[in-house]
Amino acid sequence: MHIEVSGLNKSFGDFHAVRDVSFSIEKGHLIGLLGPSGGGKTSILRMLAGLETPSSGDIVFHGKRVNDLPPQERGIGFVFQNYALFKHMTVYDNVAFGLKIKKFSKSQIRDRVMELVELTGLKGFEHRYPHQLSGGQRQRVAFARALAPEPQLLLLDEPFAAIDAKIRQELRTWLKEMIERVGITSIFVTHDQDEAIEVADEIMIINKGRLEQKGSPWDIYKSPQTQFVASFIGESTIVEDVSKLKGFEEAAGWPGAQALIRPEFIEVGNPSEFRLQSATEQGKIKHVHFRGSEWMVEVEVGNVTLITYRSLEKEMLHPGDEVRVLVHRAYMFNQSDSWMMENRLKEDPMPIHI
Ligand SMILES: Nc1ncnc2c1ncn2[C@@H]1O[C@H](COP(=O)(O)OP(=O)(O)OP(=O)(O)O)[C@@H](O)[C@H]1O
Image (spheres, rainbow, N blue to C red):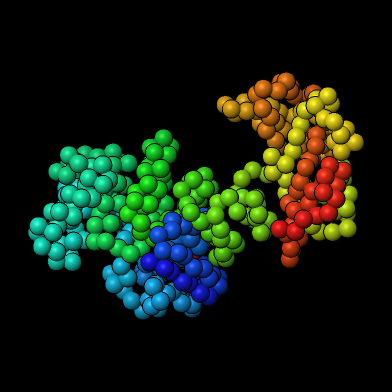
């Protein structure tokens, strides 16, 4: 189902939970609504579902305005964290529930339930009750139940929040595969950036009721349009006065602009590792953390602590070591603009606008 949302607002009294949000979603895409707690993600989802009425704005499914349609007429399936299974019903009856309401025949129900039980890897569990299942299995039943009546849109609100880390990881991969196989347009809410990056075709970053950015995980990571997005996705250090770093002197002409530097924009090492010494800073190692496949290094340059990674292949660094630091790039932000700035001493002398 193609979705078009324009100028969506939601106020609770004089509190604006959702502010002028507009977006469209292609049929079959899996969208992650990502943002900090209280940002408005669930409110957006609830308005799409018809569980909350927008204060203003339009919600259009397949070219038809659905603002006034009740939830059961919108062709939506739900998997909510707190939308528990019916405890007194077996897996079979849970999955059959929506089909009975829609008055499918007994044999149609049987065929559809068995198809979904098979699809979700729950064959053999049809006669179990929810308390006889693991958390991951329960969420798979919830998924099967949501899909049974063949909805056009699937909404998932923090579907894995209550599940422990290892199973959550497996379920993410599983969910992505399932959604691709079924080909259903889906939107899921999460405040976990790894989850959104790994699972979603596109991410929408929601903060303080506003849509800050929408795009593929990779686009959002490499071209963040606001400082909030840059600091919310991935790791970074914010530098108040980047003009003090070598190669970034030009930034002194942009008062008020802040720089945000990602770990992969920084190289740290012994002097012999750098050919262009003049472009590097003097630094001192503060901490070195072992991260399994690499070192995470905190290095002090002037009064700023920068975070970067270092290959395990290279010579080991220790706290207190005097090192050279090369900052390749920085994201620059002021109130109305965002752009990428390259180290002038290193390569391209002109700042590149995103
Ligand atoms: N029924 C309501 N009445 C009053 N305020 C509400 C209501 N529902 C939500 N809010 C407020 O609107 C804001 C957005 O809430 P929402 O649940 O949409 O955020 P969220 O991004 O989903 O947060 P979380 O990740 O914590 O679930 C919050 O400040 C919340 O307190």
